[in-house]
Length: 275
Image (tube, rainbow, N blue to C red; front, side):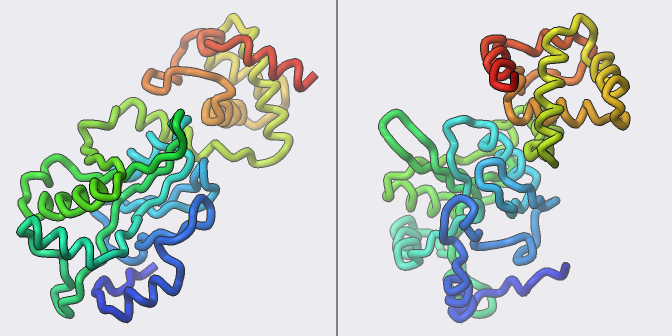
């Protein structure tokens, strides 16, 4: 699909607002920018969110990797990407106070709507809180203009009482990212039968004395399933946290299947519910 024009005018900004961009929550949220609107730095991604059940528009691998972390976190309720700071009068004022030139369209001179990469709703003991996170490769922080734009964003959220953090690749654990890249597409079951088979596989593995690889293959054979079906079910169980495991560790190995079950009481609860 062709990218849209990246230039900004007041008319274009008004059009985006009228379309509802940057508005809504959870499944109703519309990002200010989509992958069709801007040239991404590296690869762009459109995963279906676990928490929102909508397509997310992530403009780089790093945004996707941070998104994975937020998807896994139990205290995160909502994730809004490409979140706009619509009050341009305030960001312009902040720019002037900091002695920084506010980002403008090079051709039209229109002040650009700044965006925060990921705006997060989290549940705390004292209520709902919001967190803003910006994502940048560490080598980009050597660029003065990049740092200036981040300073405007940080100061804006600080004045709003919103926690702001800058995330680089150094903050993201490679093993965690690899595991989530593997599991993320398997969160939503394909059919009701998929759920039933998943529960059966869960109990099957809990009583196994063989390696994980052996048991998955045996499950396919004894249930007349295509090769690899049990592996897909296993990924679904992990993504749903039905089987608890160390997401930062090595999941797919030759270890015993029973090593995965760190919460046997929960497993027994599911068993009773199904029976």
